[in-house]
Length: 440
Image 1 (spheres, rainbow, N blue to C red):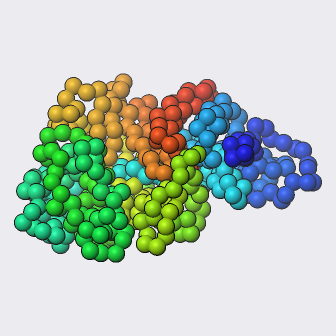
Image 2 (cartoon, rainbow, N blue to C red):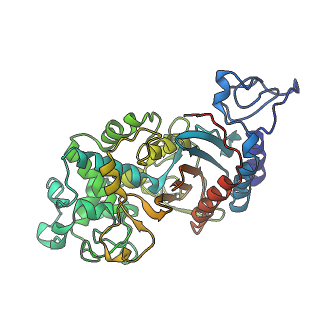
């Protein structure tokens, strides 16, 4: 039933023609509600495709096949809803909602709805770090933990001496020495860490940093790549101390505001705390429940309360709409068709191949918050995000496109990210005539 509702809502939100039919049974048209009704040309509250309000929705004509790719994706992976944004040569040419933002309330997904973006937060943090590097407030090769003297280990005598070798560069490129596959990911052990540190659960980011200073590294810093959420948690704390303000404020001042991004914000763990315009998240069929990180809450759905999103700020807690996430990518992509918030030299450093043995001879690499694959004299950059109830993907292509897709669910094995990546490329290639408008 959920799937059927998703597909029907998605079809309702994507008009194929300008309809002059007058159906008195339709509810009143509401501009921007995500549903096309009666004689609306698009989701603009009227039937005129030439007025200013028509910019509220992407005209459907060039994108019929594009839409079908994502309707099929929702159906194939049992995803309630999602949103997509597509930029060509600096112009936002598509912003679309599919399926349901809230199944229980039967609310269609709107293009402006906000989603958790999970690890797509990392490119945002990397951009903030590079802004501080540009200003001379940080050096990529300075020791990271020397900047965190106010977050000492619980037992300084037992601290791994190799922590002194971890640099800002190591944190950005996941070569800091932590390997979650060899040990564990502390960002998902907030209850246990709070207990060990003698504080109330769930553990805040600062408490996790202090705890991890007494956990031995899994490898020598700078000698290998191993994806680390914790490394980006550390970057968030360094940003705060160097800039003298909370992480989110620094990102907003240095990256989001200059890029013209207004609605991005840090998310919250619990359903009752979701932000205005934020979708509702859904577990995979049959996923069950887990203990809440909040004392006394018992068993909870994985997507609401089984992890502490507030402590994940700098590695996984941003909430954004698809168009505004596309605007972020455009603001750091190094191209002349959209004003960048970083200098060309900072962008080059952000995407350069690391001198980590893991990437020697590789056709791609993880740079600073981006996976990068050179192509045709330029490069594709991308990053994915995945949490219970969340799938996200951003792609900057070598030939002038930015593609963003956000969904309010994921499959049990968290494999849907690959299908989303493939769907974005497939859907883009269905478009044979690109419109010349700009919806930014």
